[in-house]
Image (cartoon, rainbow, N blue to C red; front, side):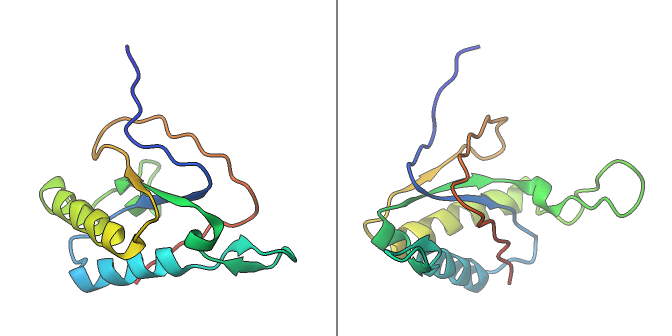
Length: 133
């Protein structure tokens, strides 16, 4: 099987994005703005004071419906809380479009919606965040 790269960035954010059927454009816009403005990159003193633009970072967005996996009952996760593809695909595309508009010169790359992907991450530092609204 031949491999191909659909999105790649250097330093920056790997955004694993899951969508619920009730997500709105206002929520997507808030999320995009929050991601672009997060100040989690170290400054000269090592304090988390710089945002993506200041750090010269990029954004890689990968759809991840399994974020809505519910394992509270049984031993197999239920994904009933995740938006079905006919709702999730337009939400994903809208989110990426809003993110690109808000990111300005920051590179925004994507994975392939619904595909089995090997996603590589080098986690440089202790920051992993859950953003939800």
